[in-house]
Length: 67
Image 1 (cartoon, helix red, strand yellow):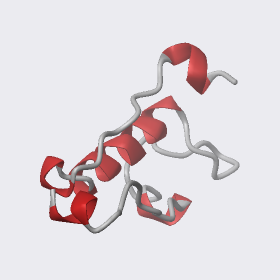
Image 2: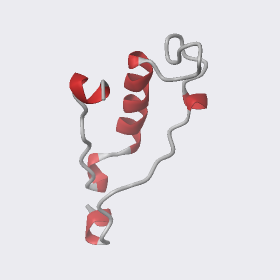
Image 3: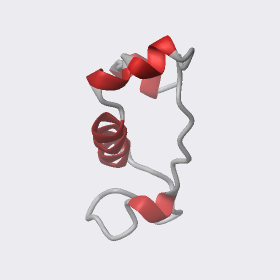
Image 4: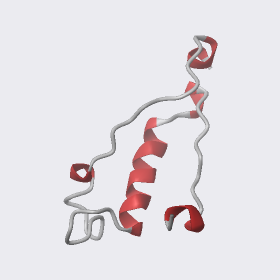
């Protein structure tokens, strides 16, 4: 909650294909994240954003991923 008190309400994170390149099923042949790859990205973000930081995460639905 200290971050929230300091005025931090969001965080920025660069998500790159190299983060999941060596994980099976993460990228398709064009280097674009698959549905499984998007889940891997989400797991990474979940580990980085802790409840103690006062950051709540948006959880995309299947329909949001198909946009």
